[in-house]
Image 1: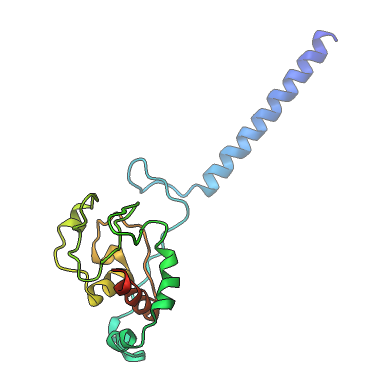
Image 2 (image 1 turned 180 degrees about the horizontal axis):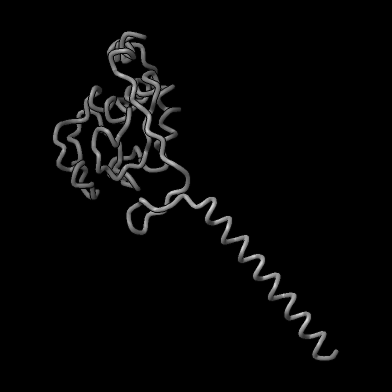
Amino acid sequence: MDTMNVTKIVGGVCGALLVFLLFSWVAEGMYHTGGGHAEGEHKVGYEIEVAEASTTESAEAGPSFEDMMASADAEKGKKVFSKCKACHKTDDGVNSTGPHLFGVVDREIGKVAGFSYSAGMSGKGGTWDAATLNTFLTKPKNFIPDTKMSFAGLKKEADRANLITYMMTIK
């Protein structure tokens, strides 16, 4: 092979690389979501703000939470608890990613020995009664903004009532 053929091959590879880089640069410019995030944080897509529905409308649409609790089913709550199993255990004193839920109903908020809570959770005060659990499980970040719990919440009031009824049996 003479030097002219080698030069053609190297030129072809370099040309292909330049075309690839050009297309990559154009695509990045077209589809990059841009900055606006905290340093080191990377988000994909766009945020869409949605207005929250008022609680008075949803309360008028169906039975009250107290009525839901009166007819709640612990067995159905046990099925809903499957969403919690990844981070919470029901055995007394066995903490995981989240604190154990043994005897959680009527327990002080943020007071499980041996578990490191966020400042907001440990400083919240109060006890986990049915109404407080209902509010928390609706959307945890609304109840305690700096909670380490990444769970989005349970939208259905019946699921929350069933879950709380199930948690009342864990003693």
